[in-house]
Length: 221
Ligand SMILES: Cc1cc2nc3c(=O)[nH]c(=O)nc-3n(C[C@H](O)[C@H](O)[C@H](O)COP(=O)(O)O)c2cc1C
Image (cartoon, rainbow, N blue to C red):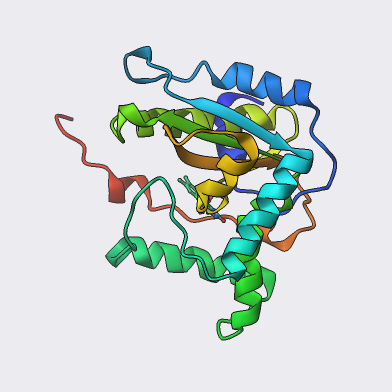
């Protein structure tokens, strides 16, 4: 698969086979991904790979927090999307719910769908990326984005699917409790990883994009 094919083939996978991913395979993915660029080659990413009982404990912890009504308190701030961004968010949800057969008014099914995200989509492994808090949000956030996409692309070579997901780290205290990632680190993002279950309806989703001409200004041509 060449690089263009890989970029076009990558998509968020939200349903996985239970098969474990060998540690050696995950190591190879990461060994490639750490070739990602970073600001001044600072390589701010600190990677925690989860599987087995540790991952199960975090999944359970996340779900318990959610069920108890605890408000998420991610290490990355943000505010609700508005305007065109909100429209795109709603568009994605409509596509996903359509594929999953979840009716708009079916609050119970929507809640169950949300739980899935907090369970890393039942993936057999997950990658957590943190950065030292001394870096602030700065370009380190950009660097984490770069390595995240590279992980997703490198994973394809091994038949693995991925889903970058902030849901998995919405309760960072759960990640800290079971992995020992200290308070001095900002837990930025999770990436669910595993072998895709291609029969899972949401994996059929083809997410939309604004055409290039809507997001590009050409100067000097
Ligand atoms: C920073 C970031 C956070 C994301 N968080 C979630 C998430 O919590 N749950 C989820 O289902 N997808 C999540 N996604 C996946 C996006 O919804 C997805 O990338 C987008 O809809 C485009 O679809 P595609 O990845 O299939 O091309 C996240 C993606 C990014 C880059």
